[in-house]
Amino acid sequence: MENKNYLIIGGSYGIGLEIVNILANENANVYVAARTNDQLPTTPNIHFQEFDALSENSLELPDELHGLVYCPGSINLKPFRSLKPQAFRDDFEINVVGVVKILQAAQKTLQKTQNASVVLFSTVAVGQGMPYHASVAASKGAIEGITKSLAAEWSPKVRVNCIAPSLTDTPLAARLLSNDDRREASAQRHPLKRIGTAQDIAASACFLLSSKSSWMTGQVLGVDGGISTVRV
Image (cartoon, rainbow, N blue to C red; front, side, top):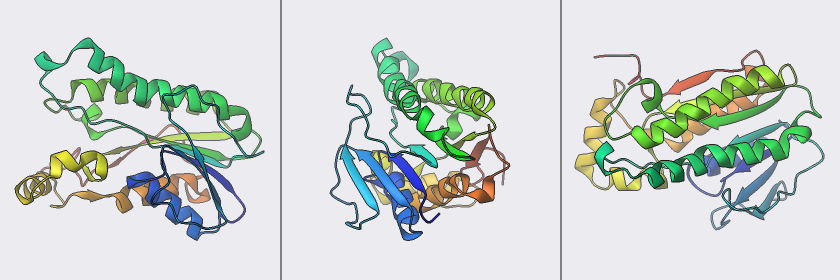
């Protein structure tokens, strides 16, 4: 990935930070747009700009982009009766409207290269119905629709794929994994008997960014410990 340019939205912690670290270690130029940069390595090939996906701020982009990953998201788990319409709007804003704004801003830059790659994030709860996931599953279901629509519209120059993780050990999920009992219960729900890590998801994202996945587009890749397809 040397000399290639990648834009990571929300790359300052969790999965996004792991993606940044992998790409930077492969000598790519990594452009990180996030609200903070406290944990980012200070290396010459990592370029940070302060950015909020929900703001109207404009992005500073390189002349060419070989890949883009949109990491911001939400985990808003409540019984349906407790979810106000505003909760659906808030989840849709961060998960869908944010993606739309970023991709429209970056489209021309992505299309200047051959076989550029976009990676978005859904959730296992879109394809596998789960209680208390109505709001986040609704917005992430829209992401899967965007993935397939843009994969068709932007081919053959730009590939668009999506990762659908299960619960992953990241700062966003800290409330759901706040003690050993919760962590063990979550691990046991998965056929592989462990919780996913940020490294698990980041490795899959970097595979989709790379030429190793050059014949993949419009796919929703389950990285979920087997919970969506396997019963043990």
